[in-house]
Length: 343
Length: 246
Image (cartoon, rainbow over all chains, first blue to last red; front, side, top):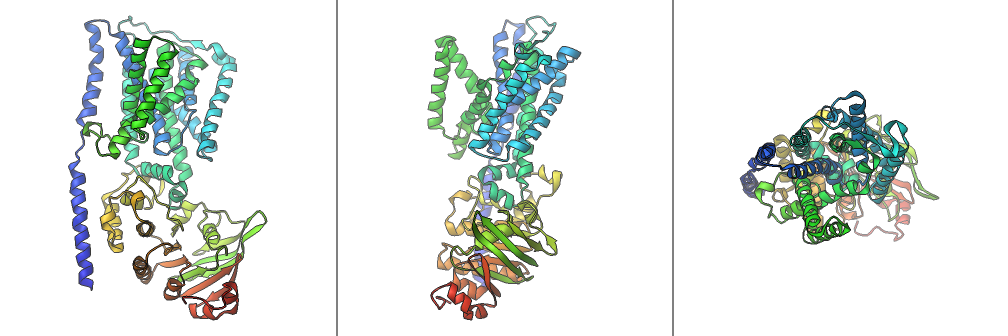
């Protein structure tokens, strides 16, 4: 009897080893993100041969979306808490760094990590309160947050109220003026994606995934769910706040209506849903697609509301065929090209 | 080892668990039985703190645990399964199990999700339960019985001192039931204390050392399976007068 048992176990071992070799075969295409990063680093050299300011602006815009969407993804994608109020942290980061820049003249590029920490701390405190509920209640609480902060910033005279504060543009020539911000966002985007990767592959990330599937089970499995999700909230607020800090100086003004509009908070969610919530490459792919769609329709349909409609339509069609987002759906059907498998 | 003193859980005017007291001896298999609606699962939930008890105390190894949060209780060595198997879809069985391995503090949180040691341990547990081949299967794709086994595997990952099994035989086919009974017995022989809520009398009578019978939120009998079987109060509670399948 015990002989058959050992035999069974040996059979199972064999089967398991077969799956292991299969898994080991899936070598990572690390070269791809590295090449993309190098290309982006070299991109401003185009300015030597002509005026590519608009291209650089689009890349910078995309990179900023990568930062905020990847940041949002840590809470919304990994932990499954959909926040429609993350632009609050975008605003807090922007205002903190913007005011310091206006008063003390310290560049927001240097202040960005500090602004991120301020946003992260605020996120931690807000998370302690709002993360007690989940599902629709949490989404509504996040929307309420935007309204509260909008009213707050519009009436706070010190930061200029609804009119905001204008910030000094840098002294570089038009040709090179975008460069510091471009590199700033590039570094932040790379850092955010790297941190997302590290989180996803840590015990913390595994715990967040468990929370997103079944919070009661996760808690009884020994995971401190409250601390995990509040920490995820804080980390995601950190990245969004960091992006906000540089965004203000790039636009040369800070004003409630550039940070605290529905469009920005919805865009981070749409980017993640389009690219693949909870994946590493998802927010990057989503950001590229959203900016590309937008540009394409602005170019063909003009800067009216029709282009927003067209972008929305394309997104709906995408989600009909890729319900889990592009990266998520392809991965599920094991059709994800290896160079996009960053998970 | 586990002691429940005057546990009460009220839902509005309904007393789901009313002044319930019993204890679980170290190294024993104790069963909690009773007709539907007796408050067994509610008592279970209060012990593992999935629900907050209205009043009463729960002691584990001389430490009062009824005020702690569930993950702390798991950390102290009390793990539970759920009646309707709760598992994490979109995560492999291996990930499901390793989720349950012990984490203490900041440092552990940022360690790799699955270390080689943990994988080895999880595979050992899967081997013990005879479901190694499922290791890389999506947790959501398992059959009902396989989920029950996975729950048991995940439980063992946290090195518990006492395990609470909520209807481990519910909806499981007879062959697998035999398997599960065998596993529980083996684990108990290795020194693990077990508390089971179960409807299957066959399993209870064969497996348990002690039976606690609940009805209408109260403990009405407490003793060996044979004693309980003859207890008039128990026969009364089960209405039939005799216990079927016993």
